[in-house]
Amino acid sequence: MPLIMGMSVLLACQFAGELLAQGLMLPIPGPVFGMVILLVALMIRGKVPSSLRLTGEGLLRYLTLLFVPAGVGLMVHFELIGADLWPIVLTLVGSTAVTLAVTAWVLSRLQRGARRGSAGSGDQP
Amino acid sequence: MNVASLDQLWVYLSGNPLLWLLTTLLVFTLAVRLNRAVGGTPLLHPVTLAIAMLIALLLLVDVEYQAYFEGAQFIHFLLGPATVALAIPLYDHRERVRRLLWPLLLACGAGIVTAVASTLGLAMLLGARSETLLSLAPRSVTSPIAMGIAEQIGGIPSLAAGLVLLTGSIGCALGPWIFRLLRITDPVVQGFTLGLAAHGFGTAHAFARLGAVAGAFSGLAMGLTGLLTAFLLPLITHLFGFG
Image (tube, rainbow over all chains, first blue to last red; front, side):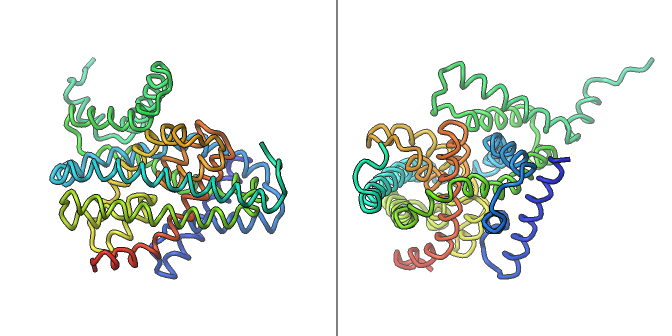
């Protein structure tokens, strides 16, 4: 019954996360808190149970599929988007490109610095 | 033997959750095949392709989104446990995360400020209406968080959710070009960047295309960005003179 065990653990963490988010009245979704709870639990336990790994990695392999139903919901917003079509499209493309570039540049710069600081030169290729 | 007429059958089937659940799976499979057939280009990402085909199909047979979601919700529901499961790759790579903690946090802050400031700046420059503007602001955060934030700062939550999804597919399409331009090959940097700029879409893309390390850092970026943006965004929009 590894799938049932693994799924139960994931759902229990999500449930605890939902409770926490509701209880603290934060606009953060339960599953994100659930991820933090599971991470802390794994740190305490010191290893990933094989049943959990089987279920979790199975789900993550099909993560792209899971976004499709929500994505089809775009059809409901055609009118709202149509009212401001060009500003929206240009803003999304421009701003996403800038965000990708800045984040990648900052992280690769800082990471190189951290590597040099912690392990000298030639730690990793 | 009596045979039901076709339109009777259609009335029965189109109201049955099974039809749209099965259609979603089949269309997704078709989209993956098509993407592979054209050489796996990120411009025709399987998710974007599947969504476009499903919307076209629903408009063609005149079925409401609500009716479609009756069936597709079973797939949608798995997003919750899948998000929780992101803790597993994160745990596997905990040493690397710990070593890079400060660079990751700083890059995350820089990314969020860039995303929000460039979005508000560009949209204001191009003359978008203020509800649109405030719905655009949280666009690089995963949709449930974005909806909460949009409501808080005065945008339209459902529009924000739609814009989040568009951002995700645009991010996946632009990512590879930007990485090539900046000569970035490290899966840690690629994954983290995709997770920050394109949230769940980026994370899914990182897992599928770049491997488990990129996926782990992408999931980390998605969670971190969501948490930080929820606190930072009301402050930034205030600086721009809203709210």
